Amino acid sequence: MTQTVELQKKGLDRIRVFSGAQLKYIAFLSMLIDHVNKALIYPYLNGGLLLKISDLFDVLGRIAFPLFAFFIVEGFFKTRSRKKYLLNLLIFGVISEVPFDMFTTRTFFNPRYNNVLFALALSLVTIWIIDTLKIKLEKIPRFLWYLTTVLILAVMCIISLFLSVDYDYHAILIVYFLYVFYNKPILSCVFGYLSIFKEVWALLGFGFILMYNGKRGRQNKMINYWFYPVHILILGILRMVFNI
Image 1 (cartoon, one colour):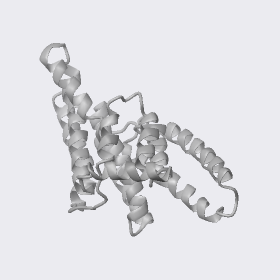
Image 2: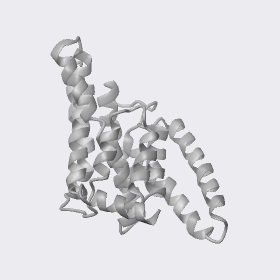
Image 3: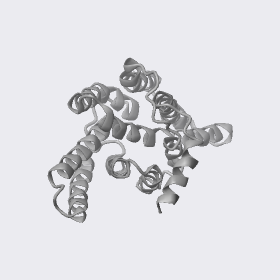
Image 4: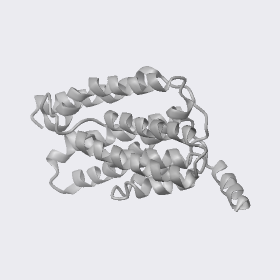
């Protein structure tokens, strides 16, 4: 068994070519492609070349979310302040909500559908609670801890549905499996993919996760936090101005 794990690690080392910063910008590009497709191309689909372009954009757009879920787990383990990290997610979730509603429904406020940053924040809270219990309940049999995590997971998935956040319980499940199998990347990606298998091409996103080399890379905090609200605001304005 140990030999198999070592062989897997050596195999993965050959493809670990992307830093965290590079993967993040790949995720941003994928997200932009997906959102342009949904906001500006979907309304005009009538077959032909445009449909083929839209289908390609649908495939490329599936790369983003597994990567963003992965960054939540990476941030959880490596951030200097989990409280600040969670607060930033919530603040930018609030900032993004009006642009998100403009982008998705051409309205300024739609409480029936909320942006993905709230889903990611909820996912962060989920693994934070589970990790805290793991430390406090370290003396109990491990299977009881796993049973407890399943109960917590179920509650948080229900909350995500109640709040109508983008990616709802799929976000919670993916982040959970990436956390539980943090040191077993192949298992984490397999279970993560099974959590969102209806999005077939999300497999590409999990493939990119396996290509992470463990290095942070040169990142721009301004871009990291503002890219999401700014680009959906622009798309939302275009939809409302041109009645798309």
